[in-house]
Image (cartoon, rainbow over the protein chains, first blue to last red):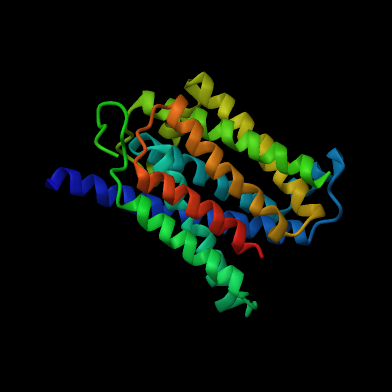
Length: 137
Length: 120
């Protein structure tokens, strides 16, 4: 791998980590906010819920997540970005186990291992297969 | 009601992702991604018609997800996203012309199964 390709590789992985963390924090804030919100299925109820601090924080984080992800999509295929950012699910399970003392079932551990295996497989492919920067898959 | 919301989430997420990937491929690589450049990326997003459309679909998906979270557990809501990995991989091959080798197919399949299992 040339030094230029390696530099792009490092940039892509760095950005992938940022995308994963922003999504994780954003979803946590939303989940927390919704759990402490009143029934919000009516349009007015949903609108009221949006303007609570946790939901606003979640929305802000998810906007940043989207901008970072757009940048990542300008460098790499959708079929590369989707599986590698799925590591976020693994982190959610780990955080639940470590910080919240949640019980992790054998099924959940199996799912976690499958996600890690899928991410590693896709992570070994060339990130971009279309356009000018297109390489072999 | 739950399954209707799941269908809305999967469909709108898939359309949003495909549009975003298509537009960013056409735009070309964005070099800067440090915090001072967020406004520039935001500007790029707002100047491209299909990217604006993708944000609308993402918003639909987001509100459907919020509504789903208010009537169902996260452990029900999460597997809803698992189906979209396979659907998006197939559509990315045919619509975005991404070249997929066996590792990409296997990876997408493993991740989809994994996401479904994680919720159990």
